[in-house]
Each structure stands twice: as structure tokens, then as C-alpha cells.
Length: 132
Image 1 (cartoon, rainbow, N blue to C red):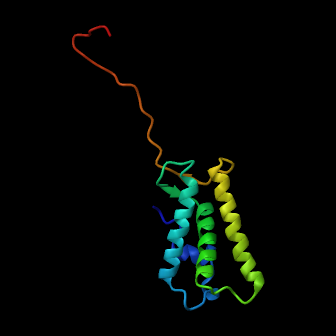
Image 2: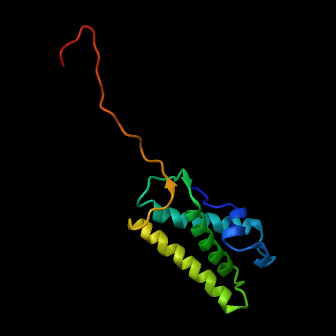
Image 3: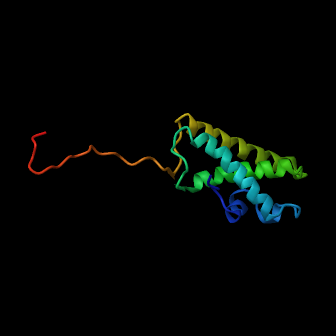
């Protein structure tokens, strides 16, 4: 399994450090990123050979959105401002919707998978030539 984001990327695309309660540490972020990456893999695996070798910011942002929502929800530290909670919810739902579109073949993320290489026909050489 690949983690499609780092803590530094989570701090940019998930939740900014200044908005995170002190109770949330890097280990919590890593666990949330890994869990969200597994969710992404469950959708990606229907269209790509796993594991994914490289990926773009599109996938990183989606994983961070899901991780941010799940992290905050699991620790029951939703912000006092309902608008902030709605932003987290909307971003996670948008990310999941995009992953569903990938799974259905309606969207194509910027990824390189481990597709098997093209096979070529076997060739037989002999001396003297046998004519087949």
C-alpha cells in the first residue's frame, strides 16, 4: 500500500497546522493518511494495476481531504464554527465522489500504475534453419 500524502502535504491540503488542536500529533496524521490511502486504493484498484507507482496532486488532495475529515471526526474535535465542519465534510464527500468516478471509469487521475509490460511473441532460431 502506498501513502499518497506526507504530513507536510496534509498540512497544506488537509488541515493547516494552526487550525489543528494540539491533541492531534503527526502520528495521528500519518494514521489518517494511511487509512485514507487504503480507501483510495479500494477505488483505484478497479481501474489500475496496484500498487500505484507515481501519482499527482489530484490524488494527494483527495486523500488529504478524506484524512482530514476522518481525523477530526474520529477525535471528536470538530470546530465550534459549523461552517468549518461543513467545509471538511464537503471536501471529503467531493473526494469520495471523484474516487467513485475513477472507479466507474468517468475520471482519470494523474497516476502511473504497475501495468504488466507488453509481451512479444517468442522467436525460435536454429542452425541449420529448419523451415518453420
